[in-house]
Image (cartoon, rainbow, N blue to C red; front, side):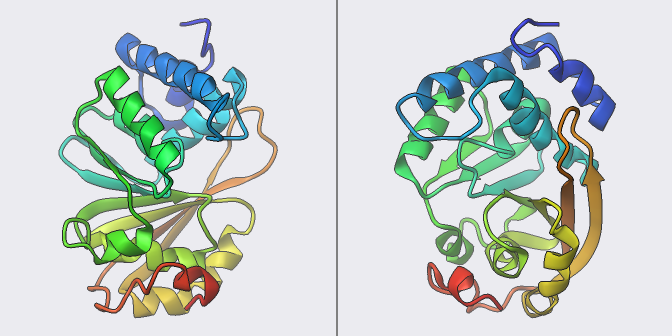
Length: 240
């Protein structure tokens, strides 16, 4: 166990059953150090202390493993990844997972590219596009086994960002707070229209965190109509 992230290995095993190796722990330590260093000059995250990074970024990201079984060769895209959450922690934890980090802000994509290079993480692509653009791009539309997002938008709008990126039979996962069930109900129309089906709402208990966390899963059961996602900004301004 390391001094920088003393709870991560044990807490990850308790939450997900995954046992992190020494090499993976070292990668998480380097990631945390780079996040703190860069956050001084680039506004990456409001949570920039080691205990917060350990629990609210790393462990929270790895909680996605409670909603889907990830393995080498699967393709995952993290929509609006920001400083890399949850995509980069999942990539560190699951060797061979092919991850696309989707982020439209240039300073954040610079940080992501730096982390990927510094840690020598293979199978990661940093994509500087808006979700609406990626959803209409041949390289990304309906290409992914798993599509994830954390703190991007309410579900009626978020569904339009996520579902066009998922392949048929794939799953979308939205990381939400205590409004999860209400948002899922409000997103029923968007799910029907975009080829989705509501799945499970899974409660996540993070150690030392009082507020509830939920993983909202949605299955991709039919192609998304070609007109979706709509033009940039439209899904948030006029949710389905």
